[in-house]
Image (cartoon, rainbow, N blue to C red; front, side):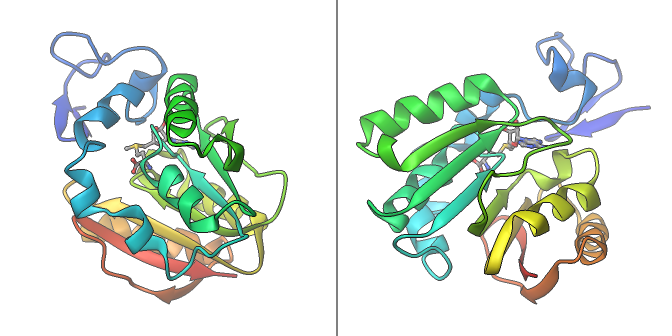
Length: 206
Ligand SMILES: C[S@@+](CC[C@H](N)C(=O)[O-])C[C@H]1O[C@@H](n2cnc3c(N)ncnc32)[C@H](O)[C@@H]1O
């Protein structure tokens, strides 16, 4: 059966005409870390300015989770928003992505606010309760949206918020509705449907 992965339709198990889509990526639906460079570039700051997009929910002193952080576009912005007294947990499956986040954090002088966390597809619980969690363009890559949302619900501090944004070009409205239903079953309460460019988005609480 052909599978659609980030706009590529693959008929083979290695998910690409040339076989470049390799390793664990081909067995799951995970965006390879280096593909993030194709959308995580200076132009992205115009479409998804992290501080502007998240400033309603991320405040100085907070502990926040950027899950599926990729190469850290939002982790860096969140680190600026939480300030010197706050903490960002940047979590991803892919070690190479986390290495890029660490390098970018050092260059930006934000390394003391960002902790990287390697997780597995089935398990990624921050060790501390978080005031805000972000899953940007990643929920559709998880093996079970419901199990994933249940973990996030368990990681949120009282009053905490969870923002999900899915790429509209890749996740249709029907699929997004299925994710919203999974989130509800996982105990997340839909609070708002914020507008996020090129995305379908939802804000949850517990
Ligand atoms: C399309 S990228 C988006 C990266 C980042 N959120 C952004 O918007 O720039 C999706 C990322 O989610 C990560 N990911 C996928 N499933 C995950 C899971 N179950 N737990 C943690 N990270 C996951 C992938 O490794 C990949 O780096």
